[in-house]
Image (cartoon, rainbow, N blue to C red; front, side, top):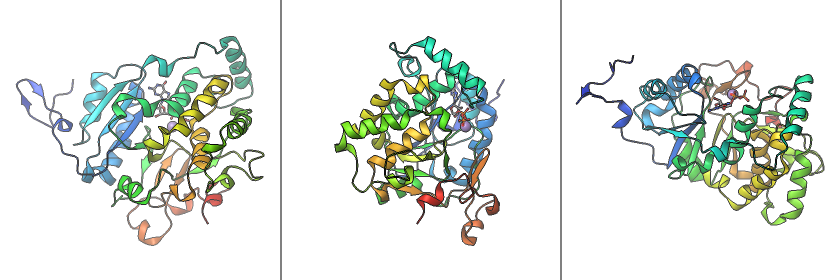
Length: 332
Ligand code: GDP
Ligand code: MN
């Protein structure tokens, strides 16, 4: 068992540092981590880097979310890595279950077919819940109510550079609502009818489409077809109020009613990205060049020497302008 070596015991209660630290960062913001209990040790590796490279100076809180209760071990070992507050939330069943009108026979049939076609996670129901939750529900969790901005983090990702500024305040001060470090092409087989649904939505709700949008990032023929480009959403620093907006909530509900999160395998990355490209102004989407980041197998590593001096990654391995990246379409 954990012996509480980091902090003294008071009245028999082990005091975890996170229970009495002060937030220095000025934004109403948090890290949000959807995670399973068995991802604990992989996440500690990530969290150590995040703390060392950034958060030890700012003490932004962590919100961990799970579809089953967190274990005591998970809570103790994750909170022991930070001075910031850590919170642990259970996902309401309605946000992690198959809606009544979904035909499970058809879902099972389609999953078997995707498995035969070797589509990654093609036959996984939990993965579908995960994508739907990240698309439409995480930002409605009650633990996030008090925040305006979030930074999504996953177990096993790496942060390579000192982050000597506050990204949340950068978003706030520059009216930025969505940010990314890596972008790439989606597997067509996971989203055969997604774009048809998006086009139907655009026709039905033209009032939500921003005039100064970024449609050229997601379509090479002015909206006729989807070019499969998306921001890789395992990294996101973004504005919760963008996802809570009428446009986004209507968009998610519209897509959810189509059933594609289950019948196909729509990912939260294309869903967030298409929404950002259509509903936000160009300047409201930002590429965070300074943040060296890796989620296997792709990384972003800044090339500029002044930035490199604060990093531990090889810029030649950066994915930015490699064949399968879309970032070249975004940057001027
Ligand atoms: P990938 O990045 O697309 O390969 O998907 P991951 O397996 O990394 O899952 C994305 C995120 O959701 C990670 O933070 C996982 O820890 C989390 N996740 C995936 N499946 C589940 C699940 O069934 N339950 C919970 N609580 N978290 C999950
Ligand atoms: Mn992942």
